[in-house]
Length: 340
Ligand code: GLY
Figure 1 (cartoon, protein in one colour):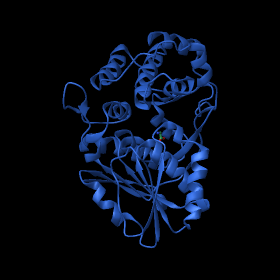
Figure 2: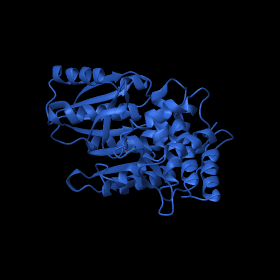
Figure 3: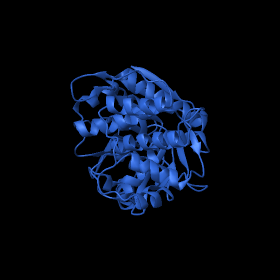
């Protein structure tokens, strides 16, 4: 078991990573909480127990659960059950669950405590850490949300063994991202299909994320590097139903960011090839889904939350991955063609 601290002073918290970490949950519940609400999905085969009065709330199994309607529904259930600001929420599941439950925790009674129990690879290496919570609008992903830190995060790596392969691969898209932000051990090939992200790999990704979040909790600048590959990924996800999971879309987005950086002369051909090598080793896609119109994607880039000053991208370069503003539209369009 590894313990990683997200060093945010009074908002800091521990992240437990390893086999049997689920056993720790009961003792992480604050002693003064009288009630515990477990927010989860029917499809999640894991649960946790406490010695407090429990309420279990199931949300939809899909991204559609990330809506203000679901947030209202959960808040009403909490109110009916008499939850107060002293009580605690447990988010048990992947990124959809931790994003929604975290946002409920941020707004119910103007803020209650919550613990993330991440049971997917994507949740463990990204969504459950760092306090970004929120839901989608029809106009785009995660457009309504809050920074609200959990009081603890539990990442039981045993839960990864039961993930459906697509879900697992989606997590590998975020793992691939960390290879360009810091040092991650190579995931071992478990079988011909997918490499295994074991405790060492998951912990290395979490450590990178914890360090970035500790340096820039509210995305003043540095935290934007965690969105490496996400500009195109979010545009693909918003553009329509292209049957790509989030991490798969991030993988295409990482290939795209590398192509843009290469065209701008920020990285050489060798570094560009290194991007494709990591993505391919994880069995991730690097091409745009058929039928996606470049004009539509470019228009969606402008709606990106990073786009404070014209078209902003997170790009690799001589100083590592960083935010680059006012990227030329012609370069962005040409790099899209490289992914076809
Ligand atoms: N997923 C990006 C971040 O937490 O900042």
